Image 1: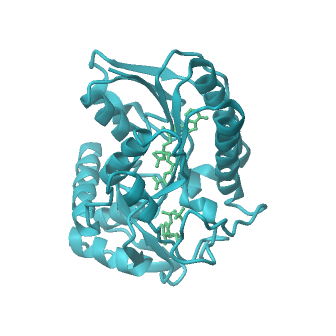
Image 2: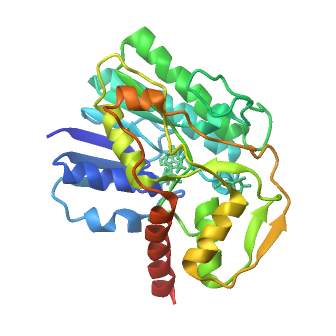
Length: 315
Ligand code: NAD
Ligand code: UDP
């Protein structure tokens, strides 16, 4: 049995990770400040003998004896990370320093949830890990993109300078149950709008692309990365390489929800990447043949069922 700290454990991805690692027989400490996460996401784990919940902000140091740390704390939706950009960059940078300092002291292995956003609006398509990216350092998205880039730098420097065992994953757009209905990301927005019969808010003409990964595939890749061979630090892309336009996504959601919602077009936000698709050869090679298993339609059906229940419970 390992003792594992998950920062951001009450969030969308963190809550799935808490559940999976508990089910595998580990002791899990979930740390969160509840900015975008919710106790509801982990309510069902509260009675578990080996689950512990701590209200804490990663911008402050935290002391605990653990074997592994999954550093997931950071708002991920543009709406939320732009709400307080200074706090967002502090969370990424000071959070990384605090968690790396902890890992160094207690000799824990530490994994960083980095992002495809380190590639910015990519000029290379699809994106390999060797691509350095195309990020605006002073735009609306910079607090998130540059915070995550700096965190990657810190992870590599703690590894090289202090021999901390680090693992970096670059997560591409992920969706599934436990997303906050007000999260603002495209999959949750479109599903909630379609279920309520409201207009579907398409930013721009909808020709921009993303590659959507179901959360279970991400969790599998993340755990395999933590268990990968000594000395393999990444960064490694974890995403589903099947690419869709936002118009295609909207059509699928409307079809699967049998909704009468209409698509309306709103202005494209500043620096919104035009395209995004991971190359996953490195993940396949290093993570024991890992690749996404859940197709968009299958994942959307599960996510729609989740939001449908949530909306019915609210009424
Ligand atoms: P989320 O917003 O649902 O979860 C983030 C969690 O971190 C929340 O529970 C939030 O309350 C907590 N948090 C935020 N700031 C904190 C702080 N200062 N101290 C302690 N806790 C704090 O987002 P998510 O989709 O679950 O993302 C999890 C991680 O994965 C994030 O680091 C995100 O950047 C990364 N990521 C996610 C995606 C995706 O598509 N979901 C893509 C790329 C990267
Ligand atoms: N988007 C949209 N309508 C929405 C929310 C998002 O058309 O209600 C678009 C957004 O402009 C972007 C894509 O969907 O092109 C993915 O947005 P999201 O915020 O989910 O993630 P990110 O831009 O960080 O990849």
